[in-house]
Image (cartoon, rainbow, N blue to C red; front, side, top):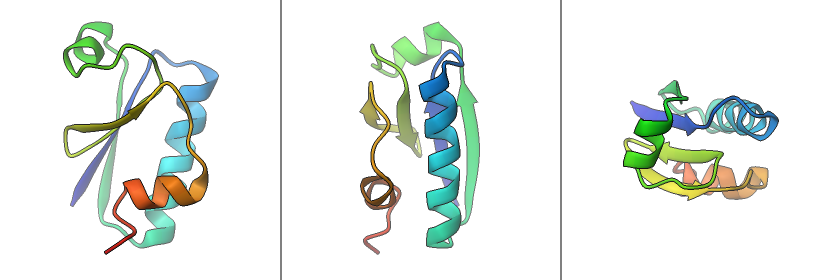
Length: 80
């Protein structure tokens, strides 16, 4: 099961990334768990300086933007 983490303080882009990541995971048929991380200390510990950020299984894959749907699917493991 993949753990998809959205890093951000609750801005509109963070909400958009959360919804897009969840939609992409469902479309790919992944077994996943979504987690919102809004603790600034934890976000900084993960190395994200610009939100929103996306991490999968604890590894930060992008920050500071909301990717297009196809890129998001690739990041989530759609290339399996």
